[in-house]
Length: 381
Image (cartoon, rainbow, N blue to C red; front, top):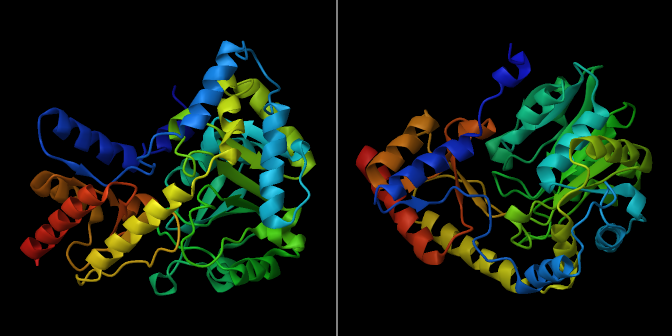
């Protein structure tokens, strides 16, 4: 008999829509895909060369299950320089992408039936991973009028004696919102007398185009109850390399390392040496290109009547299409069928009536795709 928990988990709606688009492409259709949550840039050559050099030097064996010391030292320096913290390599476990870092963390924290707060709209894998770790996801609906930025008053009614953690994601996927310092101060006041952890997904932290990135670890009172999840995937265009990491209090990091030693031993060794050189690569060009694309997309949508969340970070635009079709999955399927444009339905993130587009794409494709969306809207008015 297959596990009831695994049977209850739905496949990623992002991957499903992307798969349909790929099938249409294979049949010769001119499909525009604004679905993928990954940069379209090639990994910087310095990173590729470092991994290649490591392989030639025979660095292809097992490593410490937490990752090579040099990489954990670099990560600690990177985190500390941006947060005024004092993390050491012992706080860090390098994992197979941010996904494994998150799953390791949930396994380390949760007992069966512990509850984890999710702030909807939320990344599609949070719920599945909480369930796989034998926890219970608790959905907190956030308000569009607040740009889906959480308030303590949104979260408080959903807390219980079984609440073990709150997952925070800023800059946010799918909305592009960037949470201000005040958000974390509110959350601290809410949980200061409770034994609740914050799992802070910071994978888009360097992709902030307006204002400043803020981590809960910048508040001293939250530092010992926060676990950072991060990765090289988005910032350095390394999605396929699968290099992520967690930064946690040492007693938690020790348990995460133990879990990983049994799940995967360590992550790909040459990939670790590639990541080691990432911190020395100038990525300003990438960030400037994403911002250029963001401004292009905003200018196009400001010429329509489609409401959206104003994105200050990441590379997504979250759009309200409910006036045209409250069934966002149907909207996306019809859009793909009639206009050969692939986007992601908001219901996959817990926000019905919305769609997400990724502007991690060329200006040419973005213009073509948005024009097709506008054509479809005009037809269904």
